[in-house]
Length: 530
Image (tube, rainbow, N blue to C red; front, side, top):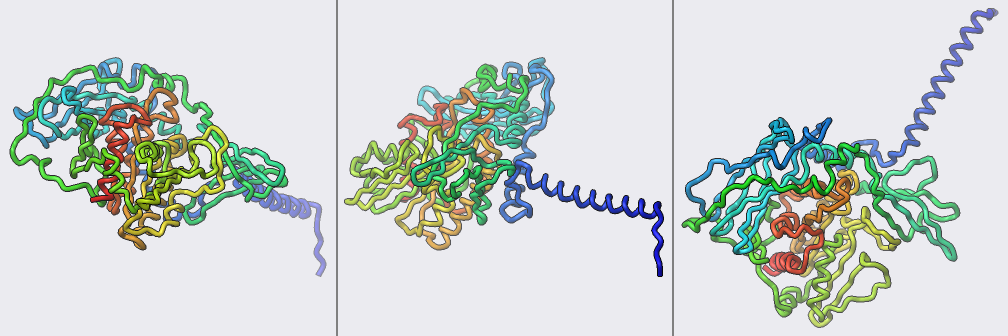
């Protein structure tokens, strides 16, 4: 059989052939473009970890305002907003709840119709140096309830701060979770006789060959541009710095200047007098022990001493008391500089603990102290990246906190103290959720093999709120607190409520003075020696 191909049929076949080639080419190009996108940290299939991260993120995201504004006059005004006592009583007793209603108004005197303002509330009695925080309930319509527990007898003064209006909160939340531009990284690679620095970070383009540092189990990842003639295993150090770049518009940034941050609501509420009545719910308390829940407010401060709401904290002011409690125990501490303050306290007060020269540089080096007479060991290590460090520091023993916990056998004499937070403020919040969840999983594994091990979680401190609001605002720590409350529910750990305690002490310093640190030490010792 002979097939005759006319010019027209050949033209049709050629056209079909070209279309097929075009389709194949486009598919290849699409695949190539997907590979070369900067977001190399996407997880293709939703794993158990990623599913939980997404669920928590979505839960927090629903709490956040999604608003825009055309003029600062349309934002929440501390001066125009109002507050008053909800359902006032003729007589208040110690242990009663006081509810203050706050109604947000904008600068034009119009009532706000949506919520999301970042508020901070304190009750105090200056005469006895007593203070406590309040829990904010947001009705999403411009009305808020502030819940206080009346902890002491006598005078109570209510103070409410507008930390950020909801319009600034919306901008901060959107900015944080849409980029990695707050921090720039450099990584150092070394080999005999030479070294090189190269760009690294959590989110790099694949246009250049990368070294990939991936923890497949915990789904943690970090990348570096691979330097020529260096192995990826020769990574030895890193440094990073705040870029001070912004994603916010000039109008949004106008809300994030000192004159528009942490504004006290000027309207005054009359002083309340609290009486000590019979059958107070705060009278009978046991010594603090692990297994409690993370709550807010969790206590109050009076004369620079912290008093937890649901339990009794012991004081360990004398060296002999500290030594007796710590005797025979090994302390493993993983965290940031606010945790490092506890180590500094030990170093300053307990001269019997000798801290070794570990042949590393800078404050974030590993700290290892030993008291051979009393068989005490104290180890502090930074919590691993993300960690802001303005000069090169070693990565040779860098492990995330979950991996560190996995290396500890545990026993009745082992104490593990963990905190993370402030260094995560500069990165999308999913990094914080993932790390915190992995810490929980590591603790669960630890308590299965060694249920007698004491694990203490320290929450984040409030800070100065003086600059770098886009990346370092306490709003980000406020979000972290909600996440921690979700992840560490129903697990046998103790809490040092740094967030609540620093709010009540009202120092407004990320590194509060010794008078405050002593209370964190007391909480720690109460948990382990009860």
